[in-house]
Image (cartoon, rainbow, N blue to C red; front, side, top):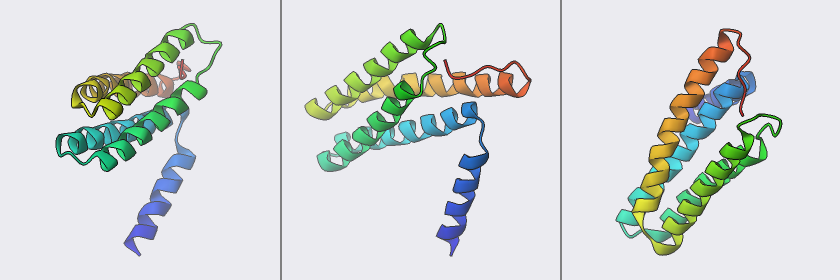
Length: 130
């Protein structure tokens, strides 16, 4: 029963979130999967690493797909996200934690940026996902 209550809470949270809040949630997921991939690589659990790193890539790919192409920073964000996926693929294929650790650092910074954007949007500035 606890699991169904938690799932209902998450479903409601997602349905009522602003675009900026959704980006923060997605970023949290990418961070979680990236960390899981790093730990799995360090523990020589390569199937688990592959699963986690692929899930992180899927979230980052979603960032690319949902970019507002009219935004002046869209091209730069797209290139940044593509770089993240390139490094995650490198970590996965070479079984190296360092490329994924680099992406993790960037994702943590990006999350803080989206949190600030969400605050600005709540203040009525209308900031949206580049």
